[in-house]
Length: 582
Image 1: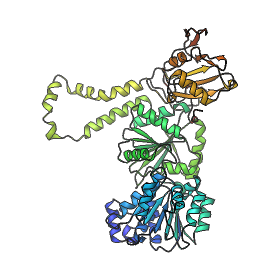
Image 2: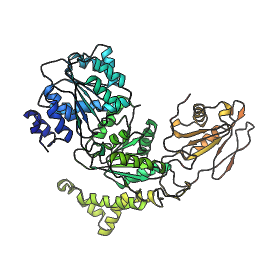
Image 3: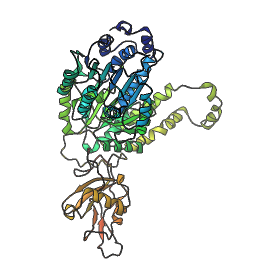
Image 4: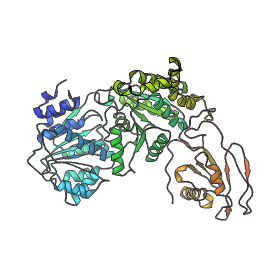
């Protein structure tokens, strides 16, 4: 493999990237940089996420853009805010102590007036998302008539997100003499059309083994019941104390809820999805990059542009529908030559999707088992001992406090001290995982495993309530949600799946709230019908009404046992749709 010195880059730029820790170029960099440095050709680069594409086009841009020319000479278009910000950050790092170029990032969700101000100060390179760039073009703020280089990064993803017309409009406002550098993980028909319409005899670089992905990624999968996915996630995290990972979900709602449950369960986690404000997204990404966050829960689109070093694990809470999404997800780990794990937690019905991805990637997935409670506890105790053995002791400062410590422990033997010290952390996990059931999916037909008396609790709503009104009463899910919130006096976040039937319905609430909700509905009528609630299953007791003539209604207490992802067949399952109040 060549060094950066051999690619034609200036000595100052080579030294700058060497100071950043880059010793040798990746395959896409080695092939693309010499071509792009000529500045006289269009190019298509086909390479997966995580292969160093930003440096492949960024280093040549820094060399080619003239420092004294204040006009906009280069335009980089990317699908998401996060990727745009990441590209700008990388370019600024590359050019440090080499050139002073004004690079402006424009994207939606942030102050447009501030972006307009920066552009008008003279943006030699603009990094933009399509929508905000179109907005600034319509306001005649951005002038692309002097652009010499246009980079379309992750072109296939921009088209998947519906930016085809925006890209056409953007490219139509640039000079015919410009050079277009297109980077994409795949080459679907729509991307090929862009190349045909806006590029002149482009050089095409296809990385060998492109479909096989990153060889440093260990692709794994575990099979569990749908309802147990959150429990399995927690087991894997507990079993891997040094995990630093991204957890992918299909929907914004799932992303938010899983992050909330992880935080509630004591994990250092946060979410990243499209409903966050830009300030919130920036805060989350800053914390993740600084590793003050251990787990980032994200949707596919929101995670575009995440370029964080040393991510150990990518965990898929479902298999994505598109092959490209899996490739982009798993590409978050195993960067810069390091190893990484891509783990899919799948239900039995998703196993076939694993086989499809194996064929496409030409890589074999390893089936792994969800750790048992005993295995998690053993791993925790070993990890604690490892920390004790390798902790750095500040001899000078700790000596002052040791006499008091020695005095306090003088009556304990070495063995007793070790046992008690280990138990401080170990007891919590031992209590939690005592009698924890096996989550690994077997060939059994029944899903009715209650799990004994384990303290393990999962992502579910504990109590399922019958209500004797439904669609025939003109009821919609939004109406019922409002009724539960109003009469039950609970927040909608405490309400789980709503299953609307003809003459009746079911809904779920957090454990411990069933009695409150049922008492709140005492004596209530809906369109002339007296409302009756009943907790499904378990013991039954009688509860007096409020004196309004309603019969005593039945409800039951809470049953013991391990909570799970969705409970029984008809209860909450992975991937349920979000709700809105009407």
